[in-house]
Amino acid sequence: MRKILFTDLDGTLLNDESRVSDYTRQVLFDVSSKGHVIVLSSGRSIHSILDTASKLDIIVPSMYICAANGAMIYECDTRNILFYSPVSLEDVKNVWKLALENHIHIQTYSDNELLIPSKSKEVDYYMIRCPHPLVVTDRPWEILKKPPVKLLAIDLDDHEKLDRFGKEVSRIYPNLTTLFSNPWYLEVISNEAGKGNALKWLCNYLNIPISSSYAAGDQFNDVSMIEAAGTGIAMSNGDSAIFEFADVLSEFDNNHDGLSQYIVKEFI
Image (cartoon, rainbow, N blue to C red; front, side):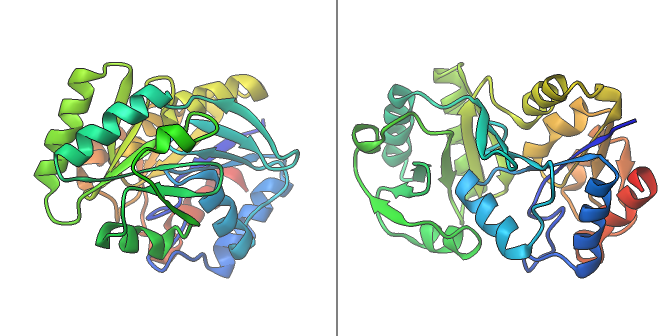
């Protein structure tokens, strides 16, 4: 029976240095060679995921990517976008202005660029792991050629302030979902996006039963796919508040091939 694995990147498949071991790389290729499907499911943009996966040499045959917390599903073999659920340009405008009114850094994305209101320590921090060409603009909704997959609000000093902002966005715009990908990053996506919805969509598209799906993650933006999967895996290094949503807790952390050591038993 063909199985499918949805894995988060940072804190899950990747170690704390944003790399993978030779062991993990070989496991991914071994899983693919058995006819199973691997999906890189991250809050990152498609540009960042492809760049990272290429540099780490972990793009295996029949691989898919769920980018921007499930707002986009990309087929690596054909380079086709299969699913796209963006944030409307009107919502970009409204959320962007609300963030700046609250003195919170906000950013959004074109196909390969990062659109920001100004240079800041938040941008510098983000670019360490996710480098993008930068575009500084006060009105991204006027220069974007199509609606973007998400917005990202960042506050490196005040999590509670970011949490209040997320609740305000959810209250005013019920068509949007806000969720934390780490304590400093608040994702803003369409209600039709989300890692859990992407998991269900791709399983249906590939005719793989949900019962044959596995999903691994370490943060709150992974909860929807952990719950949606036939087997949900929480990383032992992750936020302990998500452990209750998982079926399995990894024995080892992301710095010791925790996910790979588990999937070897299930897939190989």
